[in-house]
Image (tube, rainbow, N blue to C red):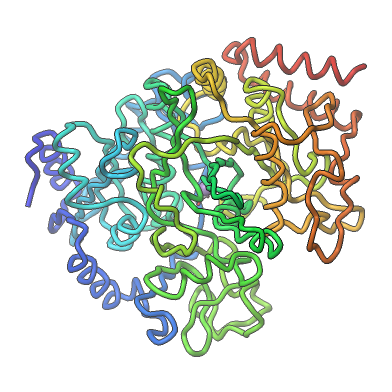
Length: 582
Ligand code: OXD
Ligand code: MN
């Protein structure tokens, strides 16, 4: 097979020659093709079958122990001018990057099959979707791309019709961390990734395309590509309102996206619908609202901590048709991770007999890949070509102190400031120290494909186009008390905050105005049915001293982006600082 599209064929031929691939296989996304790939990986040891009685059609992949997370220090944005990538990105000149990558790719597929993977990010018939083609030598990547994107014949047909696609070239190479690079060329809509098989580095539709390249493309086309979940909240009257939320990696986006409301809410008729858990493309609509699609069609979720109490919907979808990466297994070959239950695993994520002295059984960034349609709270609207209209945007972070449970921005521009000032404690989703507070504007620090200064200007410009913009809120589920314990129960009870957020959007409840934003009155968060009443005073406290320091830190951070920071944002910051000084 090949394609009717000359530019695609030429590229595939040129890559096959350069990498000296043994075979070229065009992927059609069919079940038969997937079955063959799974068989191949079972034979090669890339996959092991999990217990077919308890987990039919589920497999485990154990990665190289060196290759378990995104590698931000090896991820580059290669724009012609360094300042266009901005201080938020590692930069390399495109010519230098291409030469480096060409050296690495030369001959790297000798003896291997080159897979051509056409994919569509977003519903196949949506004008908001965008397409790409990934060339890879990893059957694991092909199988995961089939779960995470609309991959195969339909995508190829759309690509041939449009003639435009993001070019992604990937090889696992020899998995040598010294020969590992994830390069982005946003000006030519292309990606080159070498030396890693890990999802965020290798499933190029996800972070590389749907965030870094798409954010750049979105800026020139007038929309936003964001690191956000999308969730529909149905009230007892049967009306569904959609909320998008940006949270840094491993801060509970997946749990929030498929939350089951607390019992009292369920009894009253509240329901939650899942549209997406990680990435959201937001387009201004003709009606002056923001419309969102989830460009993905699956979840690549963090396994540890997922349990019957934290995320029962996730557990319900993980008992068939899933690929697990770097989890542990029980003696009857079921997948297991810390926080799941109190069984003792037999083998750890490296396949060794489990020995707690060697650390956790599952890797802290172990993952599951599963089609979104397997989720019990799956929303049919995830296939809507128009997307869903967004009423509220949440910016969340993991902050032990300072940030209250929820805070409402006074308007869109103030919301952009709240997003730009986001900070969070780091997690295991990326290589590096865990638990350090770092600035993570809009949860996009690792994912924005261009200078943050220009990105904030673009956010402001998108707001100018909206006559009915969503309200913007900052949330923090992770505030701790003096003993270091979380004050807010989180998980299902985050529904209580969402109820307040939506009541604000509908103008149904007043708020307490403070210098930094509007907060709920202590009695306005519904606590009915909670066993232990959290310290709401502490959760909703605003400490002016601490906020003055915070805003100074935000000002210092913004100044790193120099002249690219929009004046409007600086003025907004100054006006909040002025209110705090009083
Ligand atoms: C992810 C991440 O995998 O943000 O979604 O790291
Ligand atoms: Mn993510």
